[in-house]
Length: 469
Image (cartoon, rainbow, N blue to C red):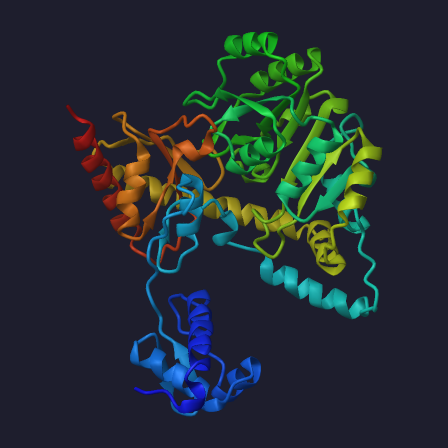
């Protein structure tokens, strides 16, 4: 095909522009592309130029035309992504977000049941109550109504109570953690974390130039307490980051007496406790003990986010802290988060109306049901390849291979079959937990999950052959 004379140069630019649109829109469903006229006006070229570029793409099979409707991308299965940096964490998350991939690595409980529709309906109702103004009154510390709702929810007693001015809301979990570490002057210090540990926390501590000491959890979800006490005596720890209820991603629950002892040791040494409450409401036990029930109030900071419960429409992170109000106020003011006031009010109404509590009851029951469903598949197809311990909350299994192997090659084997797992080493700065993986049960259960579990077992078997002498 020979381009018209006036398109001899311009069509190449239009062609490459369209390729960019197609790659950005790649997915399992087709998507409409701009019309010939729209594209010509957008790029300042003739219609014949756009027509020729579209014709080339149609010849290549990348798009197709529908009479009277225009041009559309073709639904294409995604190809596995290899992170350019060679970073395993980047590769896991890049592939999990690709269309046509089965992400067994997910940690999003709201995928099973979200509150996004009630949230958006509430937001629409509030928009009518609060007419749009030309200058939105963004609150740098978060909407007062939502801060008050969170303070009320976290108040347990006269001794353990919170005020709205002790609550700070930011764009996401990373942002509020970053500002908290700066406000408390913890940058460059030493932090103790439970291991395995959330990669979000590890990345944020690394960004703050904090030396991380990982304290491994036993298969029962408990620390070796004498070893922990010796470590705290030996190392200049200024900060401990611990899960409020179930240890995520492990999914086990530390006994109340252990938490009380740990809090006593932290208080004796004047160590800050950062309690990770992102999964605190998703424990299957009734009224589980939390670290904040025993912690020194003046050395306690609680952090969490809404998206695990509500869904992706509520990505905000928040912290509760009784001390260093001046520094926290100043930093949040400087950052100037421009968060939707109406969206925050809508979240507050979900809390105040007890809709969150009703939702959590249903979500926990559904998570437990899916956990049991996946446990059955793991026991049915495991062929003795892994150790299955039922989690006591959360959205995933912490699966241990019976024989000592590295899960990263297993990850690569499964990637070729469009299955994504989360190798255990991404939950450690030191590359520990190579024999483990996180396996989610917040899946699309319309797919053949049993086959995916079977392929996982086969991939581990194949890797065992490599490791065998």
